[in-house]
Image (cartoon, rainbow, N blue to C red; front, side, top):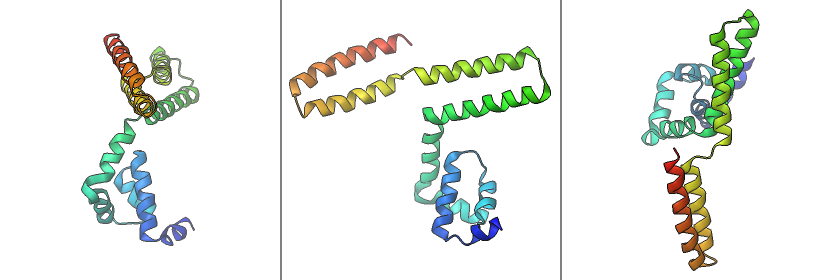
Length: 153
């Protein structure tokens, strides 16, 4: 029954679905072909079209903070389920959970220098439309702040 609904999709709909699955990064191209009901040649053509746009998007999404957090939560959930299912008391497994929790906490609470710089740039650009002198002054202070943050790493 599910296959009937999938084959009823138009090619553009299949392509969009395949792109979504591809960008999530959880499935191989072969698995996506099977889900979307297209040939491997079609999938390869879609991935390689527009100067490999799908690969560029996938790489940028795979390294985004939210994606990394999602993956860490998934790994933590899987590890916890495995420990509970096997009644595993191995200290190495507990250590894995602690390390995952630490990584998650660090990602959720820390702001990277790149993020600070981006916010600063946006704010200063906006401020320039209101008060150019103040924008220059704030830009100078943001530069000092960012340099200090870089030294603390």
